[in-house]
Length: 333
Image 1 (spheres, helix red, strand yellow):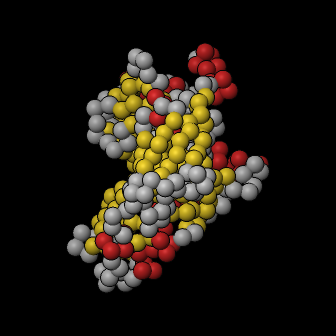
Image 2: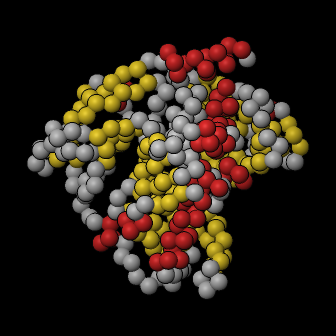
């Protein structure tokens, strides 16, 4: 117990660091591209290219996410094996089809105002933190409703920029997919009951003015405690109980390790996790969630990164968390 705590606290201070350099050019003309966004997904670590298309970005072993290269009007590039390289040359291809040509706004049974209201609710969330958020470029969001399937779909012409006033972040969310299906729909009464929700994308966080204030730090700590990120870190460190988590099976509290199995993976920073049964999770004696696996196992590291994401599902409090409740993966490190 003591040794694990020592490693967790000191690792971010003495962790290995490396600088990655590179250039970004247009694949057709071979000309350098300026102000291209380069960032590690779901972190605050990022930069942009200069007028020569050059960039330099440093990272430590705390960064386990993909490197994202994003530029408006071009196809996004995602690189996973950057750790084996020190210099990159990236050729971006222009986007072949404009989004507004694919998803036309038409009379689909809901007004633009109704669709935006639904999108804000399910994308940002309805918690105190979610309600403090504002989408700064809503005109870039393309929404389509399928009356037959009772489903709302979203695309975006550019990364969705979200200002989180409570947590003092500006989030750039490069949307890959958004689908909300409803079990009940009453457009006249504006009643929509969500059945399933899926949204995927890459994210980059920027600290806003006031991020160092005591109130902001308190809000971020509150958002972190009881989150999926917090739970995954506790799972890795095998200290669920110490972090305030109780595990229940069939309404009875059980020993967490009689249902979860956590094993180190040779030559890796990850641990393998298996779950014997679908269980309920109680945090701090008042926040109830559920976890269910549709995969045989998943992998988690000390920072709370886990994979695969598809197949690891949360319900309850953790399942209700949206973009407005999230923190970057390197939070607290």
